Image 1 (cartoon, rainbow, N blue to C red):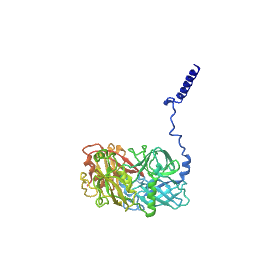
Image 2: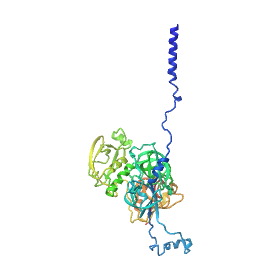
Image 3: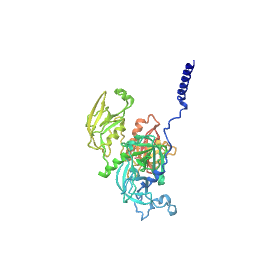
Image 4: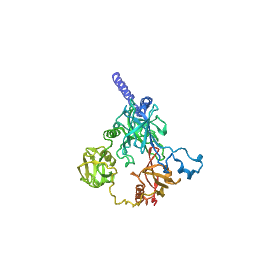
Length: 488
């Protein structure tokens, strides 16, 4: 009995020990996936001297034809009367304010192209208070990057990181001059990478870094840092319906910036490969029709006449799945990959035609100044006689007017109209409508007319407006229905 009893005691003890090691999972403490919060003070102290304020000065043209020495206020007499006390102060040049960062000890500085857009003079203010005139070495408007040079020595350059290593969830920090407050610091996390924005026609080649770092007017051109104090991007845009920061901002990856700056330094310009296709992402319906397991790739909708694609074996309806062995997820992916190649490059396109896959070799040409769009029989282009003086868009309660020196601005707004309620403001410079660039009123009229043709019957459609305000590019989406009008 004693031996049997001893065996049972041993079994019970062993069972108790095993059970004690198998506690209820809910009682187990979770493994920490985030340990502590960062202290950015050292990063800011080290890197702030490398961040600068950039001011682009645009001189106002004489509105009366008379010189300022003769009578700078003469053209205002009809509005303010003869009493000089009622006249405004001296006419000052218009300014674009933004940020930038020092790339080298001998004075090379990076910023956004839109910060110095149309500027006749550019000035850089250093963290020590010095203000220096800057030479514009080169500008890449498509990538929204500008390279400046100031005459100075011993400047503190930033350290550049590898934007290919950026991952969602990582901490990031911006230093810049929002609303003119120099050396302002904001922090947040990376919320996405490889973003292609709805403004693809203005920056179709940029795989933006998305973050929730607060960016406001004046931050444009400033650096986005990682926690190692390395620049991983240039802060460039915000997505907003109100005009203020809404929690989403976008930066141009520094690897992209470095390639652009290298080309500017070497040749004074930036070259990109051009295939000449209009493409769209493959949806599930098309993938099923072609027997594809996954909805991926870029479907060729049309080709530009005379382009490399037009002269190749590519056909409308083909799906481009890869370029030089790089998988293509969608049409934006295709544009980005092709744009990273130089004109004259021989590329191998992996293409699916129906149920068959094959390769098509094409030699890329250079990107045209203004790429023509493939003809679309279902999108008629209305005839516009002369360049109109204004375009009235009744359904949005807004008027478009020309900008001095070229371009289009938002004119008068109905206080209760959709455009005003969406956040658009008089004086905003119009950049694009529904992803199509706008350079003059005739172009704006055609785009609005096409929208009216294709959507007007449905009514209450949102139209994407990209505008520039105080040096920042902003998106607005008023509801549209109906037809535009132009002045004679």
